[in-house]
Length: 156
Image 1 (tube, rainbow, N blue to C red):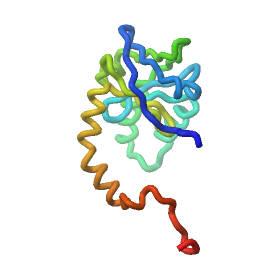
Image 2 (cartoon, rainbow, N blue to C red):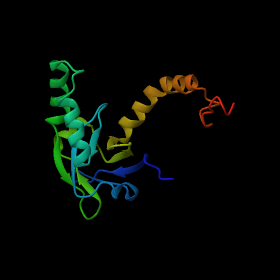
Image 3 (cartoon, rainbow, N blue to C red):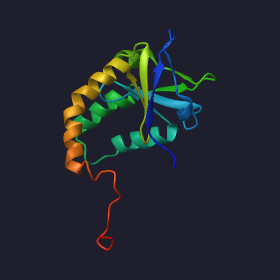
Image 4 (cartoon, rainbow, N blue to C red):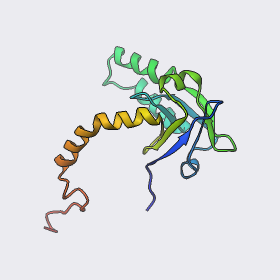
């Protein structure tokens, strides 16, 4: 089984580069797109994921023009092309470093479709703020049964 998500600690160097953990590098080679994420983090995507993300924003019938404009300004217009260097680092552009409050200690989180780069302190605060909601959601799912496979009517 391949683990498609995860997180790791990293650091932002004096030149504004973040080291991408080795286990995430295979999927994130060559040219990448970085932009502002939600909740004060940076998002890094492959060009294919970026194009789909952009298409979904620009072509959604579910959004008002004001919502589309907001998404465009936050995500599309702040985007930069970056490359993973030979040492496995990505240069974070200054506006995105400022937006995400990135300092020396960072957290790299691999989601299903992108990397999130968080300042470690900001990430810990975010997690603490969401903890009560996460507990309630876990309980709602049935904490004793969440690790069991679903059973069908014929198995019961």
